[in-house]
Length: 265
View 1: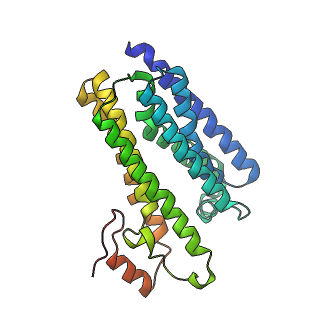
View 2: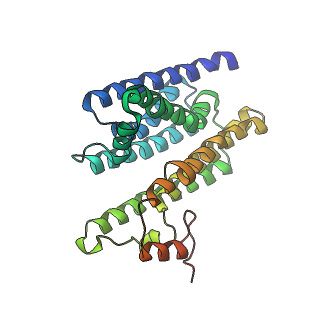
C-alpha cells in the first residue's frame, strides 16, 4: 500500500524541482531574484493540487488544499503588488555583490532549490493527507480549521493595517503600534504560523486514523519549521535589523515579538 502511494510524493517533488528551476531561469533572464518570493506561495498551491488530483479525494483533502490555495495566492499577489516596479529586493542585491563569480550557482542552490525543499517539507502534511487520507473528520479537524481562520485573520488584517499606516505621509519614520500591531510586533508572521498549525491539526486528525497516531505526529514538523524560520531566520531577524531609535526600543520593550498579548507597562 505504502509503496504505491509513494509515487505521488516522488512526482510532487519532481514537479516542484521543475517549477523552481523554471523560476530560476526567469530570474536569470530578468536579473531579478525577487521572483523567488512570488513563486513561494504559488509553489505550495501547485503541489497541493497536484497531490489532490492524484490522491484519494477526501473532504478534508479538498478543504486543506483550498486553504493552502487561499494563503498561497494571497501571499503571492501581495508580494507581486508590493514589489512591482521597485526592482530587485535589497537582500538579493547584497547577494549579487557578495557571491561574485559564483552567483549563478549559489542562486540556484541556496535560493531556488533550498526554497523548493522548504516548500516541500512545510507542505508535507497536505501531501500526506491528499495521498493517505480518509473521510473520517473529528473534532480536532474543526479545531484546526478555527485555528487556521484565526491565523488568516491575523495575517490579512495585520497586512492591511500596515499598508494603510504606510500610505500616510505623517507616519513616515514612525513605528506601527495600533490595531493588531499593538499586541504583537509581527501579527502577520504570527498569523502565518497559526495557519500552518491549523493545517497540521486537521491533517493529524485524519491521518491518526489512517496511521498509527504516533506516526501521524510527523505533520507537526511543518508548523515547527515555518515558525522557526519566521522567528529565527528569514522573518523577524531580517526585518527588525532595519529598525532603531527610541520609538522602536520603546515598542520592543512594551510589545511581544510574536504571540499576541497585552502591552507591557
